[in-house]
Length: 206
Length: 80
Ligand SMILES: [Zn+2]
Image (cartoon, rainbow over all chains, first blue to last red; front, side, top):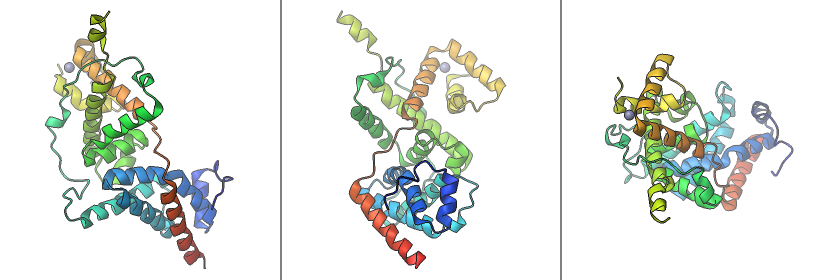
C-alpha cells in the first residue's frame, strides 16, 4: 500500500475517497496519524504491547465505521476518541490497574505548587542535541499523572482546541482546562530544574 | 487586588488569550508588580512553546507492518 501521490491531498477529500472504498486513501489517512495515535496509546496504556493493540483496533474500527464519521469534527479528533475508548478498555481488563478512567477526580491542591521559580537561559534548547532534548521533554511528560498527560498531549502537543480535546477524551471543558493548567505547571517545574539560568554559580567561577 | 493564587488559577487562560479584557488587565497588573508570577508566566509560556508540534517518534517498522497487514485483511473482507 505504499503510495506517495496522495501525500498533499486535503483531509476531507481523503475521507470522502476512503468512504467510496478507496483503500489507498484510507491507507494515507492511517499514515498521517499512526504515530500520533501510537504515542497517545502508549501514554494511556503505559505498555507497548497494549498500545500496539490499541493502534490496530483504532484504525480497524475507524475503517469499519467510516460512514458514521459526520465530518463536523476533525478526522483526527474522531479517531482519538476511538483510540481513547480502546485504551481505557485495555486498562479495565487489566484488573490490577486502578486508574481505569480519565475522568477520575484528582487532587486539586498540591499539584499547582510552584517551588522552582527561576528564569531560564536564553534558548536552553540550544544546549542539547535533538535526541537529548526529545528524550528530556518526553520523560517529563511521562512523569505526569495519566489524567494530565493525555490532556497535555492533545491540547499542547497535537494542538487541538480545548473543545476538541474535551470531545476526544469525553471530558467537560472545565475538566480539560483544570488538567491542562496542572500539567503545564508541573512540566514548567520539571523543565525549570533543567533549564534554569546558572547565573550565580557561573559568576562565582569567573 | 489579585493574590498569586488567584493569578495562577487564571494562568492557562491568560496564556491562551481566553480571558476577557477586564480580567486580562488585572492579570497584567499583577505580573508587573510580582516578579515571581512574572517568572512563572514566562517559563510556562516557554514550556508550552517548546512542546508545541513536537513530532512523535516514527512508528517502529514491525508495528507498522503488522498494522498494515491487519488493515489489508480487513479491507479485503469488506471489498469482497
Ligand atoms: Zn504573584
